Length: 290
Image 1 (cartoon, rainbow, N blue to C red):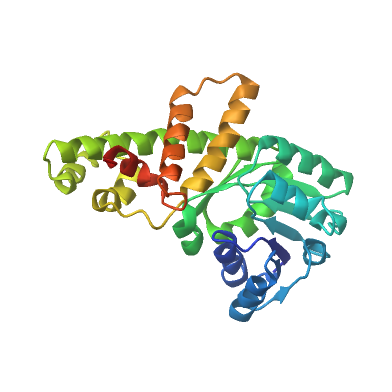
Image 2 (cartoon, one colour):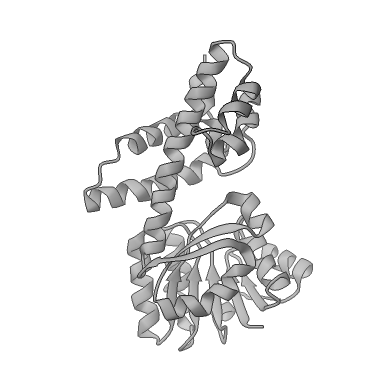
């Protein structure tokens, strides 16, 4: 059992912290910007609620974080009353936020300056993956630090991999989002085409999902897409945030991402339709708009 802090109890962080306490058996202290949510988590799962990230991180062996973006991350780490104020030498800060590789490298340097360690560890699998403890975790950091952290991360993960030095986890998550953007647009166009052609799309997907066209998106999203139901899942707002990170990095490293850039614009159209919190599969709604 380790002393663990968890900062950020949102849609993903809340169940991830629960798995660390229940499956991992760790002693948890939690912090959330809205204190009532932290108190609710403690009432359900035990442990303690902290008033600040610095208080949560004090004396912790592992400090986990899952917040919104780069600015949020800097605020709870190196900002006033941030976790790095009390991060002790030898401890490991594990960031599950989907953020930029730049901020990951910044925080790695800041942790090293305190004699501590940093791993950028964005996740894939969405809310369902977090609830069920089967996330895929893409890590950047030193190999020996990763080896210490992996058994703890395993509490909420199905797959945990070290991708390279600090920032590599975030870069891998960017690759993941590039793949998803193209897949969902392709699936949306396929369903749209099939419906217009008068095909029974349930029957179509039952056949083609077993062949080369099959994907996680097809298996898990075709029914709700056909039904036109999008009030769940990974929100369009979050995907646009992620794709902005991707496109910014692509401009820096010279990668050409024409399809990703186009799909990002399509998600902008979905936002304009009122679908900011719709699941990313709502690209079909844009095609079906009259």
